Structures are given as C-alpha cells and as structure tokens.
Image (cartoon, rainbow, N blue to C red; front, side):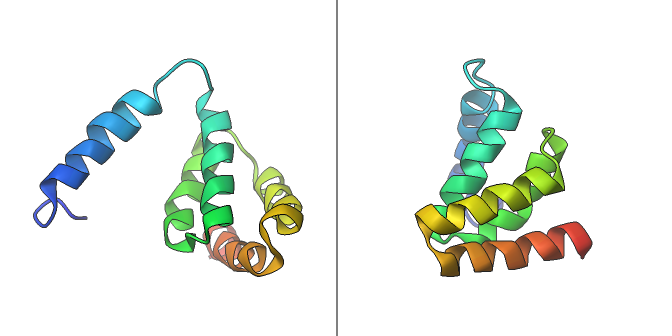
Length: 95
C-alpha cells in the first residue's frame, strides 16, 4: 500500500510489528487481535478497523464476539466511537 511511498514504515510494520511483536508467545494471536480492535476503537481509528476486524476473524474471534466487544466498549470508550466501529464491523461482516 505504501511500499513505494514510505518503505521504512512498511518495513517496520511488516518486520517489527507483525514480524516480531505479533509473534511473541505471551499473548495468542486471538488475544492480540482483541486488544488491537479495542485500542483502535478507543482511539477512534476506524480506518484501521477494516483490516483488523478481518484479521481478528482469521485469528479465531467470531463476529458475535467482536460485536459484543464493541458493544461493551461503548461504555468505556464512548458511544460515538462504538457506533463508528459498529458501522465498520457491519460493512466487514455483511459487506
């Protein structure tokens, strides 16, 4: 996506974030996905949610679990952020 434009950022993303951090054994990929989706929602970073909701499903989270997590986070991260995240989830899951 940004390989020609920002090769260092792509390298850090691929090699460090997804290559080293995501591969650490202290958390399962499923747990890392749940934490990541939660952090993105809380920060209002819905652009990245499309990728990470799909990745969360690949890592073993069900649509129902992710919808429940978003619903739960409405009370901790804010209703507007949860509603925005739910809109992304609906397009990813039903799109």
